[in-house]
Image: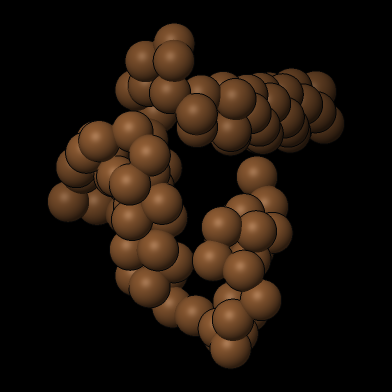
Length: 101
């Protein structure tokens, strides 16, 4: 979604420099646009780290979560790396046993 275009179209060619607005200002402008047309705007804030006290990505996501694809990709990459490490340790262990005998 091109929020710069949406804000410019709604508010017209004002002296607002959309590229220099803070995220809070952008959120207020967009909320005002929707409340004028459709009543109160309800939304949920998406938190990248979820509610975990440790800085980890959200690995438990619902099917309709917009971060689901990213979470699955990160988990898949972690699994792939883990498998490479396991295979490497098995290879090192096997070659050590063969060379010592």
